Image (tube, rainbow, N blue to C red):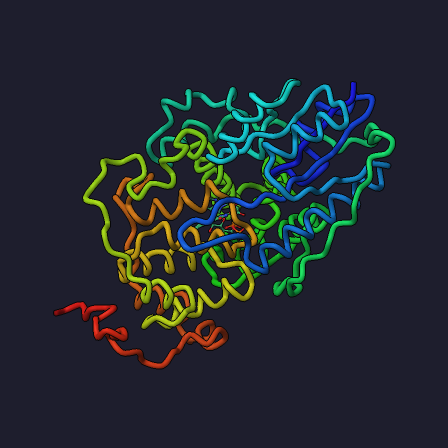
Length: 436
Ligand SMILES: Cc1cc2nc3c(=O)[nH]c(=O)nc-3n(C[C@H](O)[C@H](O)[C@H](O)COP(=O)(O)OP(=O)(O)OC[C@H]3O[C@@H](n4cnc5c(N)ncnc54)[C@H](O)[C@@H]3O)c2cc1C
């Protein structure tokens, strides 16, 4: 058979169950579709760092495929148009891809099922368990993290699968245009995209004495590679498999015993899993201001100046400014940083959380739809937080996480004082003083 495998959030060869389902084909077309999603909440496309890292993931995948006499066809466009065209052009008999919990992705799957004249098979995505392994149906998904964790934490995690040694060849005559390098700056952080680099980072983190061993104490540090694992850029693209990380962690526990740090890191992988399945259940509710909750009074104002100040790191909060500047410059922010910045936008500045989530989506080199929107909803009180949202005390956070002001100084977080409100040309106040 001549088959086609569409890589999405699984940019790797090892432990890729979807790809393995297609290695018995006579000929195989391997495709990645660089898609543009509609503009949303003032954001469009990918920020420079995110685009650069995504390109590196693809380049690394292409190199790994070429070592197996295959190649990666990268096409710009929308999957519902590109795939039917390729199927017709190359007389493909079967198409496969991996599961992604996104709403657009679900809509595309439905469209493709209608438009493709051949079967479309959806294989497991980058999760610890497949849907059939979960001890509940998605309709009965636990409302909060803790019951979810308790229900799944002792389930066996399937072993990662080997990368295929060989792959079926592409059809004769299929041309692979070179992968155009984005006109974007190089990665600002000392990391490379691609699964080799991701696996190297995993090993380094597990082996280093100041890595996993101290995770429980250092995971809230604000810098990458400094406390938390910084595996997210590879996990989010599927350049690293979540099962591989979990098994590597299990092996480390077997070798040296389970510690508060190994347990804490495993619980973070479960948070990722929680948001993955929650997004699969929630669909478009993940993008609603009140999530699945009761619709409260509609927000009818949007303060563009407040939002712009937050985006640029020019607020009255030096730590938030430093964090936002770190995000824009590097495409990464620590978990504690994301919580602080999100809380500031929502609770201090009163902006609709979805604008912040969209800004993160634009810039994050580890953007993951389920984790990003799930965490934003959590802090806004529109999601899975049993306490109805998290409001962080910014002074306290600054004292705890940047007591000497080193991080703030590094990213230029101290900004000149701004007027409390400005007027436009017609003398209308654009931002009203809070206490008027
Ligand atoms: C507002 C907000 C937005 C976020 N957006 C994203 C996003 O787009 N992509 C993303 O991968 N994570 C997101 N997170 C979760 C978390 O901040 C990052 O996964 C983490 O900072 C990545 O750094 P690390 O790899 O060093 O994490 P570690 O602490 O070393 O954790 C290991 C892995 O566990 C997972 N993980 C850790 N914390 C969380 C969490 N709270 N929720 C879900 N998974 C978690 C990640 O895959 C991470 O790589 C967001 C958190 C917040 C508060």
